[in-house]
Every structure is written in structure tokens, then in C-alpha cells.
Image 1: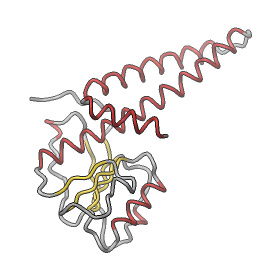
Image 2 (image 1 turned 180 degrees about the horizontal axis):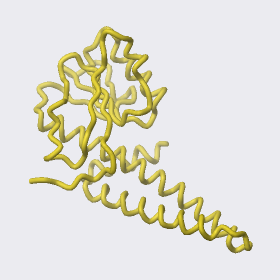
Image 3 (image 1 turned 90 degrees about the vertical axis):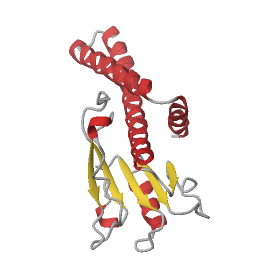
Image 4 (image 1 turned 180 degrees about the vertical axis):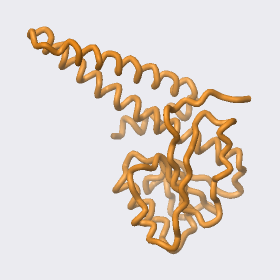
Length: 193
């Protein structure tokens, strides 16, 4: 079954895992399209960190560089990124307690991995859409006040109202695709910020 792609642009994944490439993500069976970048282990992973990524897929068993340091650095530099940790065994130090959004422990089927990636990307897109919706709502309220004061902001007001409508529609479409559990997690994360 082919699903409708929900996001306007491809989501960007950064994979810090020596064996999983994730190049097999099947866009035809997905609600998101992805662009996958693998870490270059011949360079410093820390130098490869930037804010263009939507999801980090991290091997918790990495020793060089240390997976804990990679997670901590991503959280410090790109707090909006979703982080998926893959582990061979249940770790003694829980990566979710350190800021990861999800932990999958081997054996991990491709279906489970792909559905988890898709869910995390949708949750991140929902958070972004809701954040923009609230920002635009605040801007609209300010512009309404300025309109009532007689300022010439009608065009700007109409533009903001159109954008507000689009973000509300986008958030609703993404919300409809999230399970109740995924939506609850997303709301908890939004309320923590």
C-alpha cells in the first residue's frame, strides 16, 4: 500500500553506526522521505554535527567516538533533533535518561527500525508545526491589536492568517498519523520545553 507523504521536504538522518547504513528505507511504503548521511569515521564525528539533521541514529556500543559523548553533544548543539539509539543489549546506563528519544535493543527487524524512524520523524515534524502555529498565533494577536489601533498592517495580517491556517492543517494531518502513544509522547516533550 502506498501512503501519502506527509512532510514537504525530505527529512535528514545522520547515522553514527559502523554497520547500519539505512539506505534501504523504502520511500514508497513510508509517510516520509528521507535523506541519509552516514558518519565518516575517518573524521571527527563531533565536527560533523550540525543542525540540518532531523534524526540521529546512534550505535550505543560505539567506543571511538564514545556514544555517550556523541549523544550529549548532539543534545547540546541541536536540541530539536530526534535521537534513536540502537543497542546490542539492554544498556546499564539508559540513553533515554541522557536525552535520547527512543532505544531499540537487538534483535531489531528492518520493519521495526523503519517504523520507529518514521514515527520519530513525524513526532519531530508535529512539534515543529505546533511551535510555528503558536508563534503565528501570537503574531496574529499582536497584528489584530495593531489593526484596531489603525496601523496599516492588513497585508501582513492576512499573510499571517494564511500561514496560521496552513500550519494548523499540517499539524492536524500529522496528528492523524500518530498513534495515541506517539501523540502522548510528543505532547509530553512539548510541555517539557
